[in-house]
Amino acid sequence: MNALIIGSGIAGMTCAARCARNGVHATLVSPVLSERSQSVMAAGGINAVVSGNGEDDSVESHVRDTLHGGSDLGGAKAVTGLCAQGEEIIRYLESIGTVFSVNEQNRPMRRAFGGQSHKRTYYCGAATGKQIVSALVMEVRRYEASGMITRRLRCSFHSALIRDGVCYGALLYDEKSGQLEAVYADALVIATGGQNAIFGKTTGSTQCDGYAAGRLFMQGVELKNLEFIQYHPTTIETTHKRMLVSEAVRGEGGRLFYEKDGKRVYFMEDKYGPRGNLMTRDVISREIYATGEQVYLDISFLDKKTIDERLPEVRDLCRKYRGIDISKEPIPVEPSVHFFMGGIAVHVNHETNIHNLFAIGECASIYHGANRLGGNSLLSAMYSGNVAADEIAGNLSVGKYPDFTEYLKHERELMKKSFQSKSSFPVMYIRDMVSEVMNRNLGIVRDEENLKRGLEDIDYYLSVAERIKYDSSVNPYYNYSLTGILTVAKATLLCAEARRESRGAHYRSDYPERSDDFGYSTLISYDGGEYRVRLDTGCEYEY
Image (cartoon, rainbow, N blue to C red; front, side):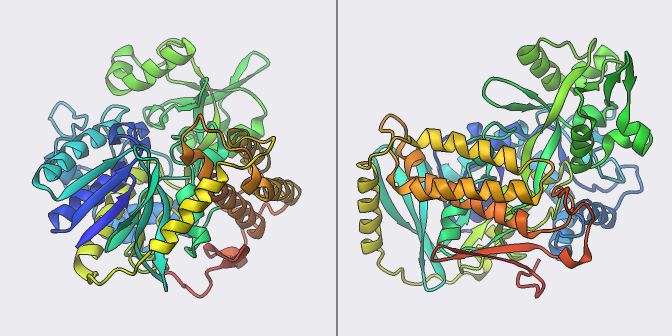
């Protein structure tokens, strides 16, 4: 039995290691090393309720916080499983070498993160993702040495091998050979992250571009809750991307303010009280947007020793990119696209509507509902990888693979033809324009007029996508992935247009109130070029 895993960040590596431990061979596919995955950027921490932590916390409380933070769109069964495994995941991470920050008694320390009733965010300074990636890389290498995991670098996903509602592997584009290759597997696991590239400059990696979700969508895989896009309220701009100023800063007491008539206005505290700076990310992002002012985040009142010990990465980030000494001056911040609650629709076992095709990590929509709590992303990445691996090991039956030779030949011909096309629009120009359209029309606050304008623009780019000029100087992946990226961009706009209410990270100025009529997840499907949006009122997905 073998599993083909696309993506080698925390979710992908966790799944591969668990597969190997369960006796299932895993092939781990990615264009770059795990050390360059988006998971490395995860800064703040990982949530868990751990016994003996000295507080009156509970798994039930974590479940309530997660469901409430997600505006009651997360799956109760799935969220309960997620929160219940928190302690086991922390213990596992410690056992493979993750170095958590500890107190004087040598016990792991916890932070307060937004939307949570207790301190339950365990952390490694402000580089938790980096520490977990490093530990998992060594764990995966151990299984590579035993032959239970095979890595394929410089390879990218092209499409799934699907027949009669069953997945049998994938077509991969191999950069070394410059060819498409059919790779058969008993299970295909997608761990490709969110749709950052459709928004251009975000806090995430542009390697996470949404293409896999878009291409699978065109092959019959359903998507869910695409309209729920989390803006992180505190980021700084650099030349190539937005850099995250971790929620850890606010967890350590950081205060948001803007200046008016020479005085500081602590707007979050004025409106929400002492814990105003730890409201959920959607609330703070909208409040910053509403001020119309340059907002600052201040931590300078903390002693320098605390900053150096608990926030060294934030200290170095601000010094390097903005020349700011956070122990003496405030940080100018603004919201930026950060996390995608929506993605590939999965059941509680992380299988999609296509048999033997799974999705895990950020690309799968199941736990976070309309808004993700800080600290839950790393937990869900690891938990989802475990769930998928256990399902693959326990319930898959190995059968014969159909012959996909003709499909491979057809896709190779299409790729060859595409590189001979002529147009005044190069691929990279179109990708830049897509991000401009999405940022302009699907921002923190949306309305019908802007959403329709965005759809018109994306429809135009889709109409020319197959006859544009392909740039031979860039990786061919950027060329063939364009239509899939445009398709997921259109699907996202359609989901936002269909949800005529405001809930979580989705705020409509023309429908500013939450409505019980929309108290369900949004599902979208694709059939022969037709997009169908519906609410999951019949509980089609078990979660």
